[in-house]
Image 1 (tube, rainbow, N blue to C red):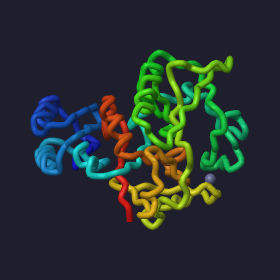
Image 2 (cartoon, protein in one colour; image 1 turned 45 degrees about the vertical axis):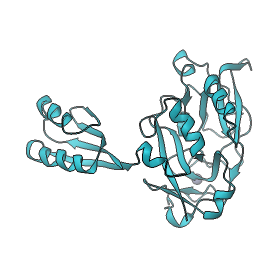
Image 3 (cartoon, protein in one colour; image 1 turned 120 degrees about the vertical axis):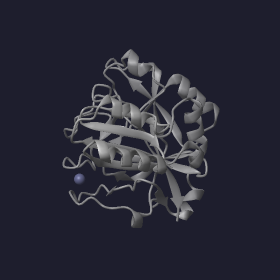
Length: 276
Ligand SMILES: [Zn+2]
């Protein structure tokens, strides 16, 4: 396991101190006046660094996240994947409307205006033009919900016979399909797969859209689910922080991501699945 630790800094932190910490562990450090992030740090190294910092800086631990290394991930067969870790696409990429019936790509039957969940995509997205920056990327996930891949990455996935995947066109306002990018979409939605004993339910809204809180370290699915999972799957439930479904991917698909230089934790969020 490695850690990502976010420290809120209450006093001044000098560059000397930053440079000193840099030498104390092998991961990455980023810093501003108010925050220091230590990423890719082991528990042992973290103890070391924090003990040192205690004496020189006034700080609080804002976040302490544990995550699996690539090697550790290979010990699992399936993973919960929300997409990019830091989505670099936004509302301009997909012309997305929260207003009722505001976007013809969606069926609004189960949409809840309060929690903004329950949209069902029924036809290809009309995008406001793909800027070169986005079109060149292998994989982007606007809203952590919709997966957009480059045509090269799509071909790679097709070559490996990944099951459960559909590729939908992306249209411009003239109705013309993009040649460079496609939407990667799960072919079906699985119900009664997530073990609801292990997840918390947000209480802010009680509409019909079942929303769950996912723990940081592992996601638990029913043992029987292992037989029906494909390489790419969408769960019926919705993560409380996501707008649409939750995706489960196989190790085979994860390996393609890694081969293509898309790294777990750094580029995409990956949480191993446990079967219970
Ligand atoms: Zn709701």
